[in-house]
Amino acid sequence: MFMFPLSLVPAKITNISADITVNEGSNVTLMCLAIGRPEPNIIWKHRHKFVTEGEYVDMTAITKEQSGSYECISSNDISAPDVKTVKVTVNYAPFISKAGSTGTPVGQKGVLQCEASAVPGADFEWYKEDRRLLNGLNGVKIENQGKQSMLMFLNVSEEDYGNYTCVAMNTMGITNASIILYGKTAYCYC
Image 1: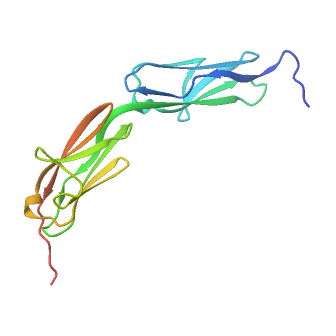
Image 2: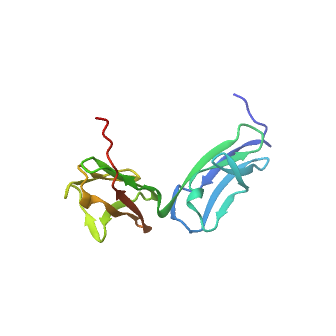
Image 3: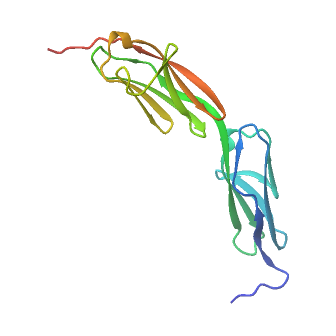
């Protein structure tokens, strides 16, 4: 077994912040302590990009873009760097990233889609005017999959046309988008 001379000790991370979940806008400090001889150099990376040098990372008014894994890399050129990771989860209010109006002929199947990014994941509700739509009633079906919600009309009628509201909410907030289901002529190539 190879022995290091007494004066040289490989860099070793001895203490690092635990994984953390915070709300967007919070202040966050991550810590990474290391020992070694010579004194180890500590750098932090996020998504493979350099963040800062030193034992601490201070983030003021953290944003959702700053979520993810932070690598603490401790090195002193005696051996391979010691690397440990801290996962930062940032809770944020929903924002609707996709909501498209659609044209559907009478008698056809119609679908309105709404997509919302949020942490924790968003819950969805659909409204027509001030009336909340319920799954399975009045010929509509609501299907939620992850960050997407679909309002499906099994057989579109004239009364179905109009303005719908997709509401996305979580513990951090609420947002909505207006989506229109409009008529469209069905072409017959008879």
